[in-house]
Amino acid sequence: MLGRRMDARLLRLLTHDRNRKSQDDLDREARAPTFDLEAASSYLERVRTLLFGGDFPVDPGLSYLDVGCGMGRLSLGLARAGVRDVTAVDLVAHNIRMARGLAEGLPPGRVPTFVHADIHAWDPGRKFDVIVVLGAMEHIREPARFLRWLAGTLAPGGLACVSIEPFHSPFGDHMRAFFRVPVPWSGLLFSEEAMLEVRRERFRPSDPARRYAEIQGGMNQLRYGVYRRSLREAGLRFRARHVNPQLRRGWRRRPLALASDVLTAIPMVRDYFVVCEYGVLEAASDGVSVPAPAAGDGTASGRRIAEGGLA
Image (cartoon, rainbow, N blue to C red; front, side, top):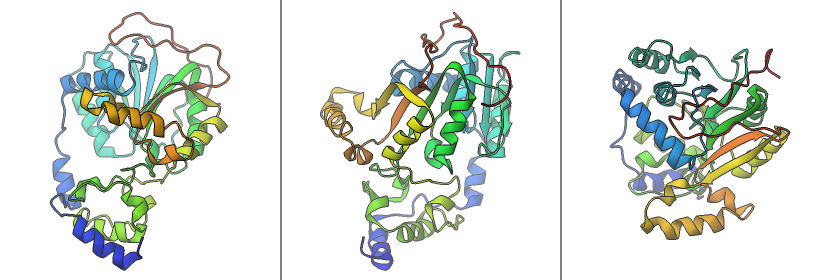
């Protein structure tokens, strides 16, 4: 906005260091899981009903792939709901160890397969009825390539449940944790160099990143309009989409929800107002889609696993 030096000075006035943590601090916090199996079930219900508006399929007869699973909260919730075919992959080895430990409390035959791998290079060797990508899309190095891989990894009639928090949205830079008060569009208002300089000082001194792409976990600065175009080029279309669903909770937020509906319907403008989107995607050429029964519905709609490897 005003150049690196002036931006950094202004940012120091707007930020605090109360959440400043070194890698040692983060490692100590990560030694114990922050949830249990009961909380995993509650999280699944929140994903199904609030975030995806009931369009997230929970069906014991389907196969699931959880991309960027973290400590496996969603996958464990699916297993507790009766799903027997769940594969979950994450880049962080510690996350996978914790997920496997939590899974020891599940009944035999309902334990997800947890895989430690980099999704950019991993080949599952099969296809899935439902692929879930929550909180990971904005961290994928090559989003367009990933979406093509996702389309090729869906079984015929399969669904992909994908969330995105675009970089150009009010808080898409993921930097809220060290601002004194929320500063929307801070990633656009302030230079990248200044933002990450102050981040190193006030928030993550052990992370030497000088570019958003270098932050631990990465950040691809994906615009919403580019994401939509990449979906089309990958041969995917929306079966359902829920934009800014958190604004639907409570009558006090109703004016914000109405404003969101207007602003996110305008091309170009919506790049800056889609705070988060939870989309259910299907192949554009598919004539048949996986139904979305209610959570706990024991009726299987049939597994649609294609023979062979990736398309």
